[in-house]
Image (cartoon, rainbow, N blue to C red; front, side, top):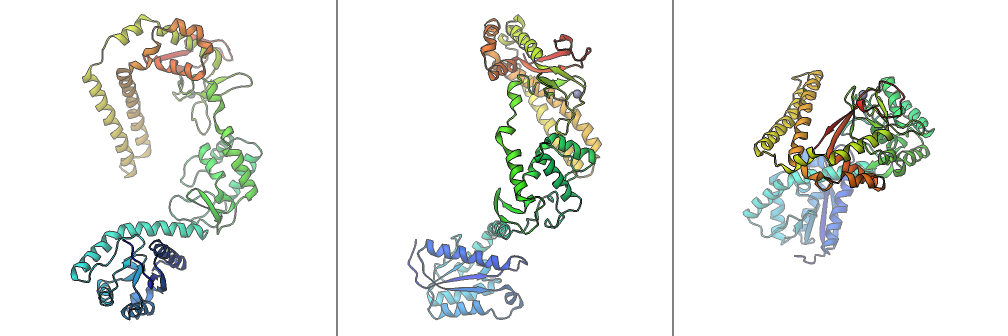
Length: 468
Ligand SMILES: [Zn+2]
């Protein structure tokens, strides 16, 4: 319901917050003006009060002036950013309501649009107070968001969350040890050194993140491509202007790092698309996942030692022969009577499924509990790790058993087609091949080579774990 008003008052007040006071008022005024425009109201006067007098009980000249103007019939509406900007005490509110009621001013609104006077009785008071109270938490959140925006626009840092690498606790001064590290990392990355190599170097130097963690390539990428490093203020993932701190690296370096490290063409794992067994191979020595790791012209899978993969670095295998071998085994299996039996016999016992479900849930809860116990200091990190790996191993087994029991149909369309698929195997694209392999094969452990450097396949090194 929008009525025309020609002489509206806007009231803003400097908050008790110690920083960004002027900005706070500017924001309130902007919001209130927008509200007036939305309602097609004409603003006659803006009043800007301040907190100090509100607290000391002294006169509040701006507030008093507004009340006077309302009482004398010169204002026909009031827009205030929030009721708590207008009054600190219920008593004040009473006085305000009285003045408005007597002057016939009923339009008292906030930009959030939830306060309007209807009539000036005690009931209204109660309603208003309730509305103010109910609005309080919402308004705090709104103020918080506003505040963050203001701080960002002023180029100052936001103080929550972990300290950014390269800066001291004030988030403005350079960290004497870390800032030079950033410069060195930037220089080396731009010279073509890989993030893996840089993360390894950090690890060897004993340099951790500001949270004391070891570097991963993706955390390193995030740091090196963060415009904060070249003196830019980022707010909600957007650069919104210059920051108040000095840049650690130049803007030119920063832009080049972004191009180099965030280029989607570089980041898509080209090799992954060529490696049919990606994610399915496990190191037979340490149990870690194996990754694509070509050497020269040869594609290989390997257990890698780097900062991201944490393997033992002890097992490698040439990809081509292994993939052929696995594909052959998969196709053979698709035609095996054994598989037919598995699929045709409905062996799924509901009790067994339910028991597995419960075990999985219980273990998942246990993992949370362990993390909590560690956080509370009830167990040491080492104890947590030990128990965690025990629970995780069991969880993994149960999950596998569960999917075996509940999803045998994944492979149904390939069953009995081994012979046919074999003939057109090389015409299938990689994702088709992967789908077929994954339908029947859960994972493959690769044992260390007994005759190193051998390109052919040693079947004894390959230990498949069938899904079906
Ligand atoms: Zn390993």
